[in-house]
Amino acid sequence: MAGYEVATIESLSINLCSKGGVNKYPAKAHVRRVAQATGKSQGLIALEGEKSAYYSNSDQKRHWRQDRYFYYITGCNEPDCYVTYDIGKDILTLWLPTIDYSRVFYDGRTSTIEEALDRYDIDQAKYLKSKTRNLQLKTICKPLRPWDHRILVLGSGTSLTTMADYKDTTTLKNSMNACRAIKDRDEIELIRKANDISSAAHKAILTHLKDLNTEAQAEGLFVDVCLSHGAHEQAYGPIMGSGPRAGVLHYMANEHKFAESQLLLVDASCEWDLYASDITRTIPLNNSSPGQWPSGEAKSVYEAVQKIQEECIALVRPGEKFVDLHWHASHMAIDALLGMGILEGDHMEIFHTGTATAFAPHGLGHHIGLDVHDLFPPPSKADESRVSDESVVAIMGLQTSSDVQKAYAAFAQDHSSWAARPNFSRPEHFHLRLASLQGVATLDTPPLEPGNIVTIEPGLYFNKFVLETFFLNDPKHRKFINTEVLKRYMPVGGVRIEDCILVTEKGYENLTKAPKGEKMLRIIREAWR
Image (cartoon, rainbow, N blue to C red):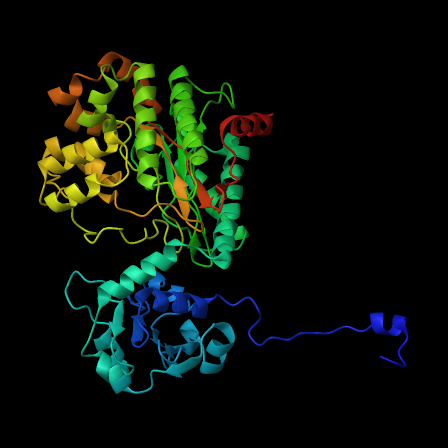
């Protein structure tokens, strides 16, 4: 250091240059986690990316969406690719389609080898130059059975030739599901970004509500805000259900005027770098008194749903079983419906009969990540797809409440060989269909862990067709429903409130900032002035 003045040394700077940048999607870390989860020290993992395709009888390409399993271990959002990973040698190879020079002027091109190495966290990039190699990869990724997912295979050898003779879709799929369920820091930040943009779009609807008269206008504004923030893809089709359409869970037509509707249910969210958000808000439509509930019934339903959501969010922590949160919400929903006078009778009898599913038909939430309905980790019991007599016995041994056990046993009794999939064409089985969606058949799902991101989305709905077709004409349900009181609540349509919740080491973090409750009402009032 001799010969340098301190002032001179302080003026020095160092410029670090990293080819491809330092913020690559952590594909290599992901594939290593997956390989470790398989328990294999040797083998070759091979996945097929999503193919580009044209609409039938048209020269227009279908909307393309990358396969999420493929993206998880490549970070590559380009069509017509493959990936292989040699577990023993720790080599991740991205296989690129050869450039079609006849289409470059029209469609652009995919990455070159040099560009792929620069963009993605991979070891090698190669072209699919030969028809033999292309055919090998296509053959490897072909499903064993028609109902298998086509992209998940695990070879016992380390070459493409030996892989063609051996496939194990179950081990790899379970391993990838387990890894995807626990988000790393990079994934959490991508989901946070998607939530931030989506929350801004939800707030924009509140601040511009006085200028909106139709569901289509609400959708247009929401998508416009997302696009202006650089989010080009919606995580799912936006739901803008006003009035009775708020009682249709996945209503996406968005083609009606608000007219005399009391509420607007907005279930819409964008993606950021393929990672989804999922947010729902229910907004009062009241031109005469903006920012006020248009009826006492609408206010009662909203406040009931808000209370359920707040209480269930507060219960999120590591070690908690999500299905127990769901049943807690179910009991709260029954209490609310009894308090409003819509239901009458014994709480537990209503619970075990399934009548409350007429108004609370879906689960409390789901995992979220690369898919909006992201993967649950593999079940803790061997049987992950069926609910049989044997699994009933096993599940009854789990540490769950007696109410949950009794409900599950009653559900399984009617369909002991295939309880999760009754004959839903029979009206008397409709409430069992709803029960299966609520997670009754997934009591063996592992407890929540730090890094899980789940939605908490309770709702209460008033769907005329469902009520008349499956509940009001069935004596075992009708005896609990006060039809005179129900008439007053039918115009409400439905209320759902949904946030994305990160499970942390000590509890939770709410990633969703979209206004709700009194803050939402205040924004509407202030914007209307």
